[in-house]
Amino acid sequence: MSGQQTTNYSRGSHNRAYPKTQPGDFIVSLLVLFGAVMKADKKMLKSELDFVKQFLSKQFNKTQVQDFMTLFRDIIKQEYPIRDVCKQIVNSMDHPSRLELLHILFSLSKADGDVHKNEIKVIQSIAGYLNINQNDYNSIEAMFFRNTLSDYTILEIKPNASESELKKAYRKMAAKYHPDKVNHLGNDLKKLSEEKFKSVNEAYQNIKKERGFN
Image 1: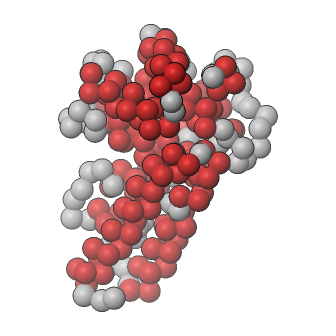
Image 2: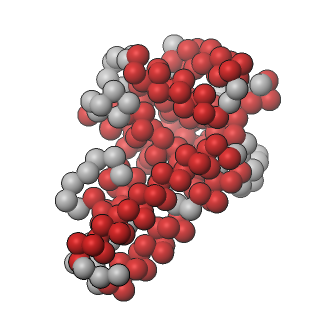
């Protein structure tokens, strides 16, 4: 575990090149961002802490989970400069990994079923700091907050898009969110990333059904 908890947010960026981010680096970065989102509404809810523990339990053994939870309790007692943290993440993580970070943060925000507006503001800020563009942000947000246009938003197209534009958008988003893009994060995190891929497929199928074509 000592090799997995060496991320230092006071020293600027990593020198590692893409896509060599290790699962432990990803998790430590995620824990810092978890803390920022959880503290946004000035409350530390048990449901959110349970989410973090359950999330870690899917990736690591019992001893590692205990170590990470100890680290997390230290993290939430401190104030990290989130912009600087995100800058380091940008320098050390590829774009698919950062998209997965954003997806997991939205999962955390919905852990208690009641999303506070300040949590969304923090997630929006984090997305900007992570160099995630507005279309990608909207796409991932739409996977969690459904409305009549969600399927189109997920595919990053307008409701009046043609059939050929729809198919092109689907291929583009399926490639962008393909689980293989985060192979380097480990099998368990790859499985987690399949949720984004599934959302893209569902959005495409919903629109096809709505429009009545195959």
